[in-house]
Length: 164
Image (cartoon, rainbow, N blue to C red; front, side):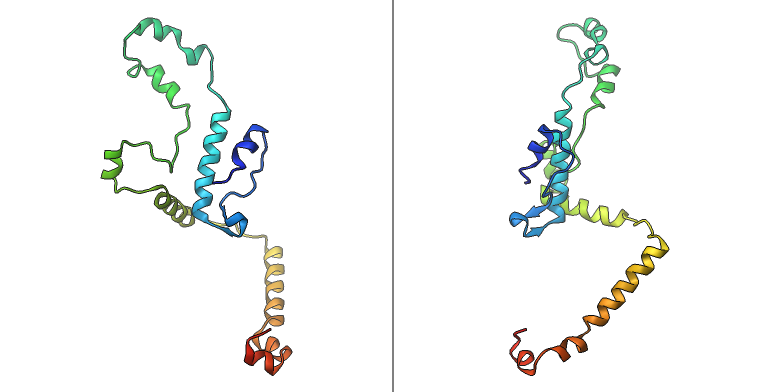
């Protein structure tokens, strides 16, 4: 997990370095990225605090239902409950329900989320001038880095020993 998520939230930062990174940044995992994203969302939501107002306290309902009553069946309870963030990856099911759904652990759910993101992703088309310039740069790089060009620059000894 990225240890910079909470300090960034506490200092009201808007940039968290290292999401998805493994091995001190030597590699990146898309699955780790979506896990870190979920944790960052949870931290961000918790930093908002609990809203306290006449609406959220709902004293009228408290007086109506009374001590020992059932607040869960009240419409205002449901309305105020929907104001809270719910995770997509972190499972809140009871163990029995989780097992019945196939025992998907966090990593498997993260894999599924990455697949879902790629399946739904539709890149915005580049501006034609930018696209043409990028194609030109790529063609020039291909010419410079072609195998024939590379082999002509290397000695026969380097090619046979594998030392470049």
